[in-house]
Image (cartoon, rainbow, N blue to C red; front, top):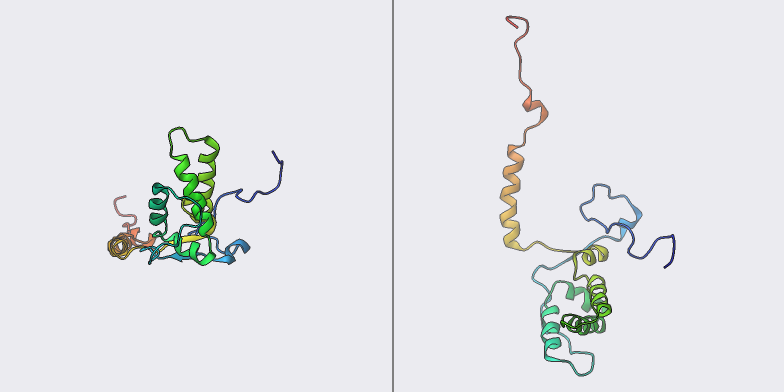
Length: 160
């Protein structure tokens, strides 16, 4: 095991809502993915002899928001390898090293929360979620009072 020094995924993942935004690592920016996911048919399966389960998972994955970036970066082979590892890992007698590899693929492809943060990807809020959240935020702000509003005048000297 190597000692000391930074690792590729050491430390906390980036936070798009962090208060301090002037770090050099934040200049790369965040990519907002469409909430409705990738549109269109999935690419052809790039590996040999796909199983039915692999093809089903392949089709499902290519409709996710992350698939927009996979397509832009030409990651069809990586996604196919993830699918193959995932199908092997979900077996009851699946090997532990394959399960770890599937988790690592999920992180690198942005399929986990940790992976989304590391890739600096955000999913745009769906229209109905925005509509539900907006009134609640306005109601909360209208109830919040400033420190000045909480002060009250106390009569001085007489009867105290």
